[in-house]
Length: 346
Image (cartoon, rainbow, N blue to C red; front, side, top):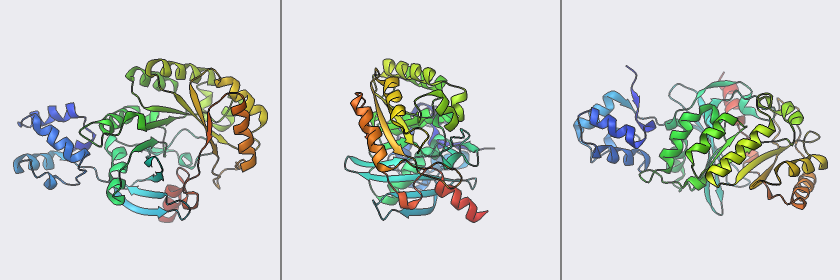
């Protein structure tokens, strides 16, 4: 019989389960705290839980704990990139970044990705499987344990399309945000999507206070289709409508990710078109000089042209920043470390 994934249970699910084992409901809160606040890795560490209950949990449930297999530290900025092994032997990557405003972790939501974006290494081998809520949480828990440092911000921008794993992402957010867990503010959680409109609208109904980041990367459908296959399903107009709906429901400013690719989407006209597209929205643009990968022919926009693009947006009243490059010397882009590891061990 398949053991239940204890760490993926929200508190109400855990309460029901503990009662079904013949124990008192309040035990669930104790167990939940052990799992998500004290970050224990085995049942014996739960010292205020009876031996009988611990044995029942051990026999019927499993504790997902990721195994660190590689850790790289940037000599440029101290960013750390981790490769974790899952129970089934698959590997995923996560990134730990230090900022003045606190430590941030970027987590993966899938093993691989099926979205096919041309500038991304995560998608080169397609999608293997979704991560469970516990496997997404564990990336943060292991990094907290390894570094000994508090995590204050979490971004779901690693390998995978979060909205292609929607239910597990929602569970992950609720557990991460729980007062009985790490209690990371919803406003300090960012989820990035390539623009799956149905799920943006579904998330809007939840009225969560997380930041929604849209991987836009183009000012029009023609350019976007050349970069991102998802653009053949959802138009930019549909994405903009969904973003406005999200803002109406949550009051949260939308963040647009825009990877600048030389001679593809980085011209003055592209900047003007982008500004016209989003000028009436409560939003922010994050410009990202694309991190080249050897399997693609994309080249990054040179720094002076990145600044020109930024200035053009600002002249048109758009709030914009250039993303600070982190971990460039340690295969910082999504999917690069996992891919090289797979090649070494194939």
